[in-house]
Length: 220
Length: 260
Image 1 (tube, rainbow over the protein chains, first blue to last red):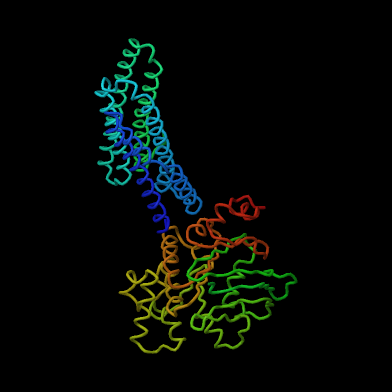
Image 2 (tube, each protein chain N blue to C red):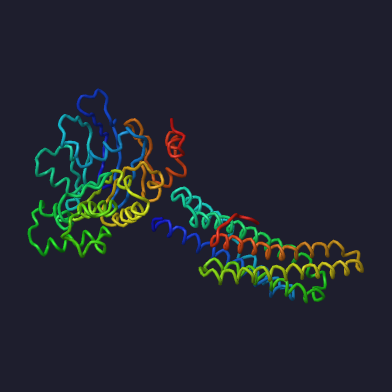
């Protein structure tokens, strides 16, 4: 492949890393905002992923241009296809993040979040770790290191999943004792579900990065 | 600013009624790569060869229109179709070099191949010749492979090396434009890759026009692409526009392999 292909692909890679890092930043802010339903920090988190759609459009168009001009093959092709899908995963994770903020802030002042903080904070911490690790994998070349990080993403996602189940049980129990707030508990659960989904997207990103390295078939 | 301006250029081969090129207007932009694509017989090689009037080696061709070459010193254009004197032809072909489909090394040493054009240009001084040959071979990414056997026959080089030697020979006389006529069609993928890298590098110093049947090659390396069909220029645009959003249906059909 000629040098211009590499330059274009490196540009795409750095743009994906940038939106990925903004996603991580937004989720880190959420992590600190969760504890006391800090509206200011939630707003800051929302702002850090404000222009993601136009940025992902830009990346998508750059990838289409690469496909049209360079018709990549083998690892080059895997890389371009994976970056296309990773961009989509990050865009959807950003959308999940926005939904989380919207849903959580709508009810967190009315509910006693202290009772679930022991689960929501570690769940969000796992989500942050999963997504941060998967984004860091973009710039890792060493196969062993990549595999190690991939397993870390799987563990953190699994932790987020388990913690969500615990929150679910806890909130359902609380809702049974407080039937007039049932809708609010339901909204809170739906919001927290988004955090767990973000961790799921981290696995998809990690899968795609392993696919670039080892090949085989694409699977979600 | 285009280094070459082709204006309403028509070309007819001797003994043929209809023109092979019909009123072509096309700029060759400075320090850019322009790819000429189209099916066999569309006139792209004829157009390329007209750019340094190599067709004039055979008499009887008919021209119409203009092919203007920019004089980099004066900043003025000169219509190369008005050239008649032998020394002017030599000067033109130094300014507008050509690389052919098959490597054409001369049956002489590697050094003498590269020095050939320089000697014709009147450079006799041995140390200057040596420096220019070395610079040309370095510029053509061949120096590392041949620096210890410059006195050996060029015929012993591989196909890819021979093609790079031909590029070195053309580059040595410091041309303004380089014309490539399917330069990699006789080469394997590795040599093709090396030549493509070299062409992209060369555009920093010269303006390039390349005829290719390889769509991927055109899209990979060129900045502008011209699609020709039956002697007409159908579409000319930035390469990414041609390969992503061509305006003409004929262009789209051709690059997607649905032609005919």
